[in-house]
Amino acid sequence: MSYLAFYIVGIASIWWIYRVGWSEGLKTILSVLIPTALIILFNARAGRLLFRNPLVGIISVLPTAVFIYKGSQPFVAGINSWIDRKNNDFVDSQNVVDAEVISKEDA
Image 1 (cartoon, rainbow, N blue to C red):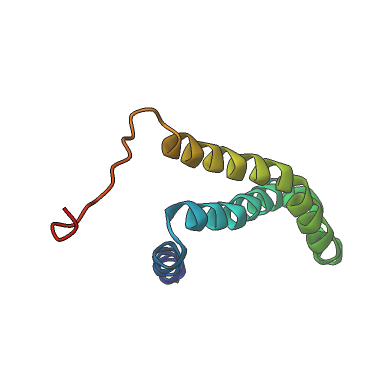
Image 2 (cartoon, rainbow, N blue to C red):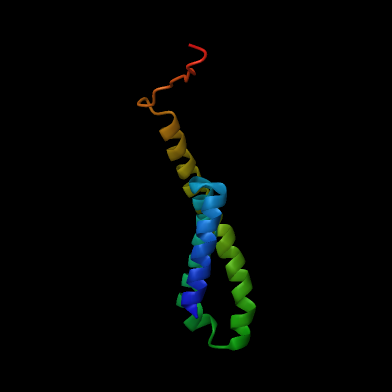
């Protein structure tokens, strides 16, 4: 069942990158993937302590997810700005030569 979920997520990621471009697609995917991975890792590690009592586990999952999501936003913003800087460095590189195209009729 998890393979089906990974397949659907992979197809959706490819479609999103095709739709908006590499840099924007990568930034969107990372802004979803990083908080999700951190929430899963935290719940897996803290699950032994928090989920001994099911009531405590149910009550604590949503607030911890919100705190981890809000706490990971500066990290995600840093990664997104790094991706933007890399794209701008490529556009502003010294090795790019601007050329004008003149049609044969105009020449």
